[in-house]
Image (cartoon, helix red, strand yellow):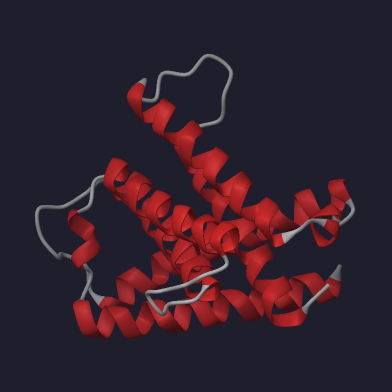
Length: 180
């Protein structure tokens, strides 16, 4: 499991590097996004991965790896927005955005370590397409929770679903980069 932790951290570092570069280029323009819009953005990314998996053809150019990285980054953005609320403008400095990124990526790692212990790394025997389907399922659940204004009876909240999506996307990236 130590190997998994190192691979997870390596993938998060790659995603954070991309996040940092986009912060340079665009600032924190994502601060204006409401959580439901982030959920829809995550849906677009996951649906595109599934479309490429099913059709076997990619006409746009960004590959599946890029889309899984986007799911990690938008998942963390979603967690930031749930914690802080959305803004009417780009109101976050790079250092602050990266501090939030570090906090939520560490929470994702901590959750993965706990689940990885209990599930004995079952994810390593899964197909990448299953991660895509699980992310899509989590997105449909999240949309339902949003439609219920967060008022669930027995279900985890939106934040837990975002966290699971991040971890499934990291698993996909680990398998794409390192194989089994």
